[in-house]
Image (cartoon, rainbow, N blue to C red; front, side):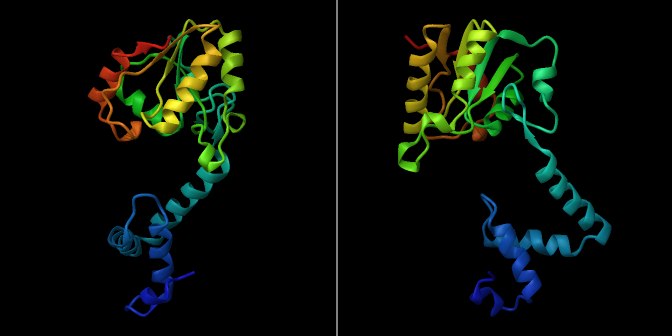
Length: 206
């Protein structure tokens, strides 16, 4: 629904609706939403159609890799298909944003496992809603020598890391990236150097 104050502030209704949709996106405030909407209005119609087609195609075609649960339009994602990846090393992340952040460092050359979130009882997210059982199965079946927990340094991240460490320690070595990251910060906002050092300084969880 279009906010009444916006409709009464000089915005024609279709433009107000477009601005409202942009403002629903994370990190987009009113000024940025207005700037994006006005920018699109100045584009040729074919560019707008291409933008809309790409959005709809991504929504309908992008799913999850059946092995690591990273975003993929194919049964296996590009990373799982890459030759030369260290199959004995598995990095566990909360979501695909964190995976992509670690890939930008160009330091990690192992495999990944995407949980799909973090354990958060306050939000109704328990272990059964995450890709934890599939993680345990991978560690058992693929003979993983080390699991690196690359989870956000927060209450939820700590809870999830401790839970996973207890599950996985009987099968493999479990380590966690170093605390060079500010507590409560998101991995995908950290720069490449900070993430690389966090990986290098990981510590074994006993």
